[in-house]
Structure formats: structure tokens, C-alpha cells
Length: 307
Image (cartoon, rainbow, N blue to C red; front, side, top):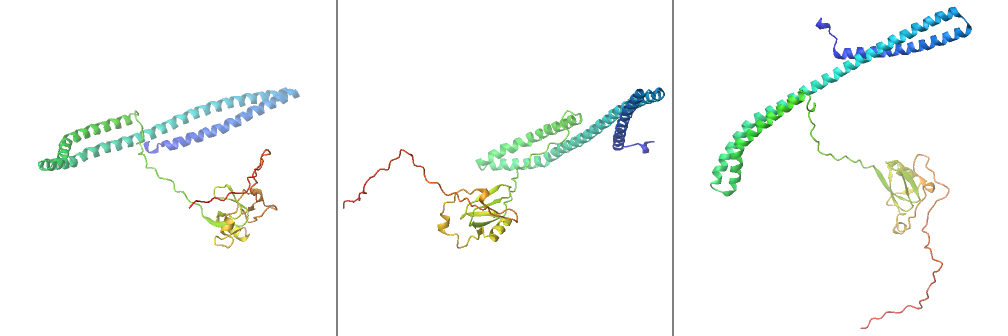
């Protein structure tokens, strides 16, 4: 009876379960075929003909069972493929019907909107005609509204007919099933600026920033540290606050150099330690070519300006 009809989802679930069950049985059948063949070979080596007859009979039965289950599994997979294709086609037909209905609604709204527009256009055409008798600037509106009373209505009829033709092509499968999604305006991603604390370094320091990059800074520099690293730097006296007396014009003018990360005070982790040596990397003296000879220019001349 119709009230006991199994739905498509139940049929698909049952077909998948049957396919999986047959796959497990096929694996067991393959194991049984291998076992029967191994047993028959052992009995042949032992010379037990009576046992060999039984093993060969069991082997033929195992091979027959394997072939039967393999054929059943192939049929189950074919049936499952038919059900899955039917489900895909049913979902596609549903989407196409919904899309066609939405397009029909769009065409209907087009036709319904032309009435109020035509009435407003007629009023504006009359006003523009009367105004054009007084001022020249109204003649452009007069021409526009006079033509729009006829042309817009005719254009709406063409558009509505084209929409309904497109809806029919969607149902027939000749056009895309789903309604197109309007292009969304670009929304710039919100960049979250990491929270840092600015300190003044008293020694070379190294730390890992919010992006996972190793950063280094020489002593007597303003550094922006993550909050946890800033707390460790203050506790270890590796850095001080910006208003500390150590931050003077003299210290800020010092050559910063290029610190070696291996010799910097490490601000990562609770066990922040400093290497034994500190690589200050002072600026190297300028190289002097071996052929250079200093020139003795004598005493400088005093420039005097005539008055």
C-alpha cells in the first residue's frame, strides 16, 4: 500500500548498508578461499588423499561463494549508483523549480510596477509641458516623460517575456539551476593591531613578536614589546620605562650596531636568560688603501673679507 512506501532517503540508506555488508562478506570469502587453498596444499604434501578430497570440495565451495558475493556486490553498487543519481536529479529539479518560481515572481513585480510609474510619468509629463511654456530648462524633462509613457511600458513587456522564457529554459535544464548571487561590496578586513608596550632597552634584547618572527634590538633603543615580554624585561632590568633617567639625548645618539641574536637577552619564556658574551658590534673603522699617502697641506689660511 502507498502508506508503507519507503522514502528515497531510506532507500539510499538501505542500499549503502547492503553494499557495506556485502563488501565485508566478500573480504571474508577471499580469506576463506586462501585458507582452503593453503589447507589443500598441506594435505597434498602429507599424502592425505581423503582429507585432500574434502579440502578441494571446500575450496570449490569457497570459490563459488566468493564469485556469488562478488556478483551481488557489483549489483548492489550499481543499484546504489542509480539511487544516488536519482537523488541528485531530484535535488536539481527542486532547485530549478524554485529558481523558475523566483524568476516568474520577478517578471510579475516588473509588470505590477509599471502602473504606478506610468501614472507618475503622465503627471510629470503634463507638468513638464506646462513648465516648458515658461522656461527653457523644462523641455528636456518634457521630452523624456512624454517618451517614457510609451517606451517604458513596452520595454517592461519585453523584459517580462524574456524573464519567463529564461524561467522555462531553467526548468528544461538549459540554463543554470540556481539564481545568480549578486556581487557583494568589498569589505576590507579588520586588522587587529597587536597590543605592545614601548620601553627603553639597557642591553641587547631578543623576543618573538605576534607573527612568530624573531626580533632583536640593540641597547639604548626604543622597543615595542608584547606585554608579557615587557614585564620580563622590566623584572630583569633589561629595559626601563620611557621616562627613566637612562634615556637621555646622549644614549640615544650612540651607534646602535647590529646585535647577534645568540648574544641578546632572551625575553621569551619565564626562564629568560642572557648569554655570557654581549656582541655590541661596534662600527668598524674605515679601510685605508695600501697605496694611500697622506698629504701635508701645511697650515690653514685665514680667510679675510675686504671691508
